[in-house]
Image 1 (cartoon, helix red, strand yellow):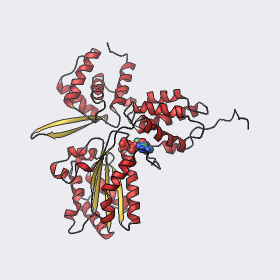
Image 2 (image 1 turned 30 degrees about the horizontal axis):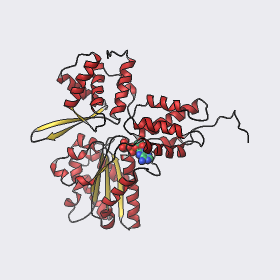
Image 3 (image 1 turned 135 degrees about the vertical axis):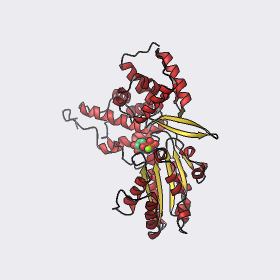
Length: 398
Ligand SMILES: Nc1ncnc2c1ncn2[C@@H]1O[C@H](COP(=O)(O)OP(=O)(O)O)[C@@H](O)[C@H]1O
Ligand SMILES: [Mg+2]
């Protein structure tokens, strides 16, 4: 049949496939980590013995996707084994206090209506315990972005949940816990809490390689784009670019989506490789460019230093960041600000939600601060700040 040249075909079959809360039907290249979780939690399914674990890894490595998938699967296993298992994931960036989190768990799974305010943590724990005993239920709580909770409210809730049985008056095997975090939360917990966790129970996710990102993109393309609108070349390019920016799958998927939208808007019937490059360059991870644009130059330079020092690392210390800051200033012919000012800029950046800071105890009395870009790879952040500095006339002399 001859082609019908004047009928424009849409490119995107289903936008939802590219959305933030889409749960992929499969998680290629996370099979090993998924079975690691299943073997850790086999004791829960078989005999109701509680377990604790960590999932850690940089942004976009599939932590949340893996945790969600595991929740669904362990509930299903429970059904098959006649064990009532409820697995609930709470995002601690949206709810970062113990009462909010407990309220959420109770209303999501056990009792639809419960006053939002007026209950203490102890009362909420009591309500939860009552429900679990009555329903003969094992609850698996997944605290996603647990660092946000620990930072805002301390480790108490983690402690309470990981030792739930000790206060349960004889009832056994009520609550299991998984903490999910970019940083290794473990090290932020106090000794008493950390002692209920085993280091070996960490499921670590690394950045995706180019080939892995290709497979992830191919799955999205098949689900979300019309056949014939994308080529292997286009996917390879998107995978390649995301791999060089920290192996972040979210970034790769957003690049493909943006390029597909552009092709559709321009009335083409397939995605051009150039659109991928354009979309990747405009990509900002979870961080809108405008947020950085409003910052004063010193803050931007401090941010550049954090990004640079943080290449291929989970975090940097204040000292490392400050050292990088001095190098950045020298390169750009700027006079560096003093330490207290430097610190203030770090706080400002944290206040804007652009970086995360966490204080960690070191030795007997010392502390050290760990800094990491929030929800974006160091490489991606570096690129953005550089683009911004350039846009404003590039004071750089080198
Ligand atoms: N192995 C995978 N297969 C398919 N999609 C994935 C995979 N890993 C991550 N994704 C997708 O990439 C995006 C980022 O993953 P996410 O789990 O949110 O990362 P993290 O929580 O580590 O920041 C999500 O859209 C997720 O569905
Ligand atoms: Mg996540």
